[in-house]
Image (tube, rainbow, N blue to C red; front, side, top):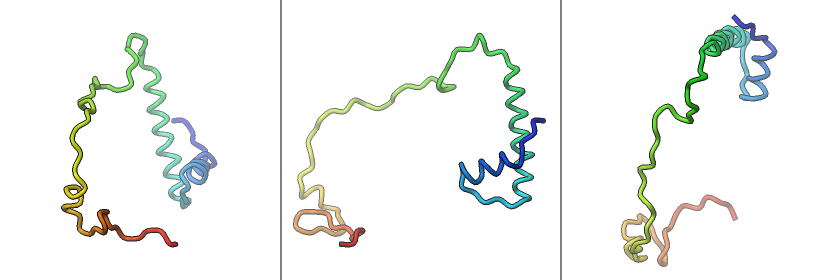
Length: 98
């Protein structure tokens, strides 16, 4: 199994993920990351020369329709279900201080 050093786990945790880990967690992650790397080494042994490059394992097709302009709601219709409105506008709670 590839050896993952304590310093490598701490680098990823502190600098990349902004995590604080206990000594037990560092030790456990050293083991788990080593197992993951071991699996990657097994995957590297697979001959993929005859496999087409793909960005997704399933064929992807766009199921959205083209945008087409249509009729707009009137201001009155747009505001008809608004819980609170004032002078023809939606009224919302203040989120910024003056």
